[in-house]
Structures are given as C-alpha cells and as structure tokens.
Length: 279
Ligand code: HPA
Image (cartoon, rainbow, N blue to C red; front, side, top):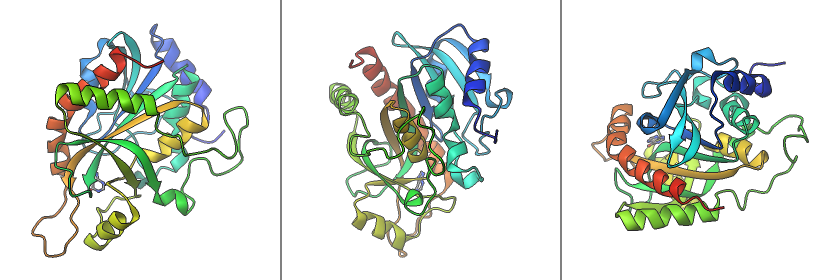
C-alpha cells in the first residue's frame, strides 16, 4: 500500500487514542489553528504520531489533530494542513479527509487564508465558499485521479451542489445576527507557493474568482466523493495585488497577522452553525 492509502488503519489508530466519537471535521488553515484551543475536553494528537498523516512544514500550521467538544458537537479539528506546494500529491493532501470519513465524520468544515480579489472584500472579512475554480485540477492535479474505489464513491461526481446550501444559510444568518462581515463568493485554488502576479490576479478576476488561495479544493473533492457534507470559509488575509504600480508585496507574515482578527469571527460563525446544526 502506498503512503497515504491506509486510511482505515489510521482511523483505527485515532480511535484507540480517544473515547470521543467525532461527527464533524474541521480543517483550520494558515494562522487559524487557534480555534481548536477553544474546544472542551480537548485531546491533542500531534500529526507526527499519526501513521500516514501528511506533516505540514509551513509556519502558522501547528500540526495537531485536536478532538473535543464545541457547542455540544464532538469535532475533530486539524490544526494546520498539508499543501500541494509542499510536494504532497493531491491524494496525500486529502488523506486526512478519508480518515475523517472512516472515523464516522459526516460533515467537514474547511477554512483557509485567502487573498481578496473582489474589490468589495477587505482584510479581516470572511468569505463563505459558494463555489470554486480548481485550476490545478483542470490540468490533472486532482486527488480523484487514478482507479476509482467504488466502495468509497462514484467515478464521476457532480460538483454543482458542493457547498451545502443549508450550512451556508445558517452561517450567513449568524454573521448577520452578530454583525460579522461575511461574503459569499468563488474561491480559486492555485498550486502556489509563489503568490500571484498582478496579471494573474486580473485574469482570475475576469474568470469570476472572488478570492484566491492554495488549499481546500483537494479536500473538498475527496469529501464530496465520500458523500460528506461540506462547508468552507476563507479568511481574507490580504488584498490580492492587481497592478505592477502597487507599492505593496504580498507576504506570509501579513497572512498570519490577519488571522488574529479572523479567528474570533470564524469562531463565532462556527459556534453559531454548530449550536443550531441543520439536519
Ligand atoms: N494568494 C494565494 N494564497 C493566499 C493569499 C494570496 O493572496 N493570501 C493567503 N493565501
């Protein structure tokens, strides 16, 4: 068996380490891992202990699986994730989602840091993914490439109903009640690790992207393949630069800094969604 294939074995390893039975998975992106610190009855398993689990090499990704309680739900939260640009295949990047499914998790809520392309988006805003553009996927970097295991999911999956409408509605209601700036938009995934050129940002804007980042869609594909319910939310950590005349340059530090404003907002949204979880 290849690295990143034995998700049943990995799920058994995790089951042996906890008595809690998570039903909701959280994936916490760059600078957003702090949300897992708010879980009750926390049990922390470092990724380095978990067989087959892809390790994140990126600053701002703590590298723990945290199992605990949030608003009456048992959740398994990934504090940090692995990325395609770190040299993992899309399949390896999405391996933790297969493990979550094998653990009995039915819903995954993914978060990421993203650059805002839509002119209305400001640093610190949230954007609920209503759809995505998977540019690496269009040229073959897709975790579902290769022979299909029919026991896991269909060969050809539909992607028109990817981001659960009721979860999005619930998140939008919470944002409205709590006065949190939450947009609904299209996330474009690129491979990275270089940030985009201004010409690329203008191109992505023309294609209909509202925000751009380097993660999430591989995991979303595997979650949908496994029939899981999906919600995903970007934290807008910087404005994507669309002109060579700009004096700015995008950098990872600003991405992590913005996380400090975004984590409390995201925490409020997620708590609201989980406390009144739509059936
Ligand atoms: N581009 C790509 N990925 C990102 C960005 C960005 O501007 N900000 C945070 N992740």
